[in-house]
Length: 443
Image (cartoon, rainbow, N blue to C red; front, side):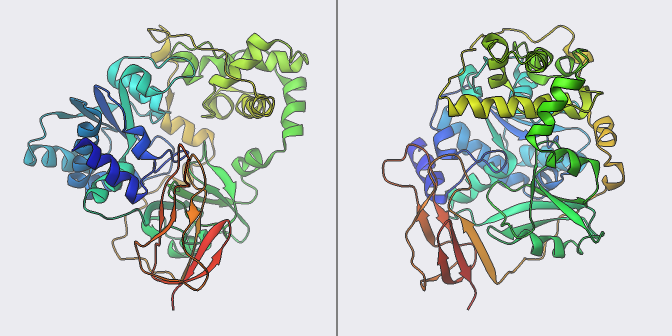
């Protein structure tokens, strides 16, 4: 049974539906005692997971049970916030109806980043993932809500062809849609009534960890939210600030207050990451302080340090990200691997309330519902990226001119690749492009 589940998940092209898109068939090929569903949805403004936990509760439980069988886990936990009242009610009813006594609900505090897998794991189990480690190292697998729904679908032979996406911010009708993978973001914004401002910017993901993108880019397997903001919004300015300016500010303005470290989720879990010391070293030009600056490896880039901690407008997160990029180019490996047993004693007093963060980001006016739309979304054209996951880009197995139907296999894991995923047609039509993406247009 275990092998059949892993094979079905691999064939269906299931990857982590949030974050970097790690192939799920690789993640669940492990032995653990606990599987945790990440239903925190801690990024402000995003709504998809709380909505589909309510609308697809039974399917979520089926997917969770399958992963528990694959990993040998005896405990299943759905971590979510109590304020997701409809999801809580539906899940409780489904757990009772399905006699899922091995699965429990765990109510998370309404903090950021409750959905960070290491923070979530600690809240649920009390365990601390080692520095540079992953949940597997402490006997846990953490899976995203939509990922597990895709696992359930895979068991019945349905591949991943659609994505749940919240479209919010400066749009006329914020909503959550289930759309074909490869659909242009521009069309998605139109589904939400179009932009409410003439000059706008687009964030792919949440306001904290999302990236600026353009509206001609396609939806991928990891797209969870599209946030439209006025071009002159402070969050847009922060995300578009060039590295040279970030570095100069770090050298000139840091007041050595350590507020960034005080709110750092990794530091609060007991890790040795101290953003303020990295900023001080950079400010002095002391890149040679390797024991200090290499702790950037431990940064999750959650943004708590710059969006909530720093009062000087600095970005320790961006500094850490740049350091990691430079370390990677120099083929340096993370030297930090401490195994803290407990989180910091003052952790509970340093947690960041989501509502306060929302207003700190200047997004209070956009904190509105984004209801799930049940009408099917049809599009005439998709571009399915070959690389939208961790691992090797998928290898096309179709040529220009090929006729495909929804669900047909169009790209596969390259032979010899340790990590990768399959891709499937998200609409029926004719292949018109095969390059870094596969373009399909209805006939």
